[in-house]
Amino acid sequence: MSEQSMEIKKLLISDLWKMKDEGKKITMITAYSYPQGLIVDEAGIDIILVGDSLGMVELGYRDTVPVTMDEMLSHTKAVVRAVKRAHIVGDMPFMSYNISIEQAVTNAGILYKDGGADSVKLEGGQEMADKVAAIHKAGIPAFGHIGLTPQTAALLGGFKVQGKSIDNAKRVVDDALALEDAGAFAIILEAIPQQLAEIITERVSIPTVGIGGGVKCGGQVLVLHDMVGLFKRFTPKFVKVYLDSYSAQVGAVKEYISDVQQGSFPGDEHSFNMPKEAVEELKKVLDH
Ligand code: KIV
Image (cartoon, rainbow, N blue to C red; front, side, top):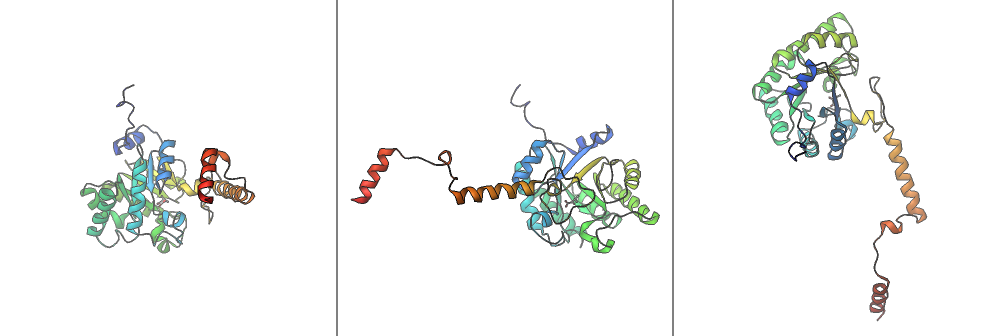
């Protein structure tokens, strides 16, 4: 096989649309750092979201509201440096797009042009459609996010399932249609009844990716730290925990502490050696 044919091909939006057309599920996960980017890309994930959830799971903020553009940019760049195949979505933090169309396009441009993301994501439905349209018109692919939108959870009565009443469900459907019309290339459906997610998935032509939206969405996204057990503050109902890496890492550090305290680390295999004669000579020189 030639070197060229072994080259890993970056997933394009057209590939994601083709997956939808062929009924293949799209896989998506968050990552925030160089090693996390390497891990999820090697595992074969289709889309990596450098999510503003980094504020909670990496930076220790109470929620995603305080996350800044500088933080998003730095983490996006780290992931971009690691990834060869997956499509990378840079998440627009709260108040980086809410004020005006100009602000939204400018900051989308920073994540896309300076950060190297392949697209940007912003939260909100009908009320954000003008910004999604402007970002799209500027030549930047935009990913929508509706249902439970964490940045504005305070207006939604907290971190609650959305679309449970007919009126509210209709609003979520209208949000999806407005984003599709505005040019969004895909939409995240967060914390809505699975039946509603199924209806939306059938009615829009772009892929839907669910997080708490049930199995009928075109794909699924999870926060990496939730599914590998690294974030312990709370675990939403929609998370499946595949690994308890928090306990595994605490265990490893405890073992290291004990090894150091008992003098069993470092061993000979972790140490550098000087020839015996050189040691003797050094001692003589020092004692002289
Ligand atoms: O920031 C994030 O991780 C997200 C997911 C919850 C979809 O927006």
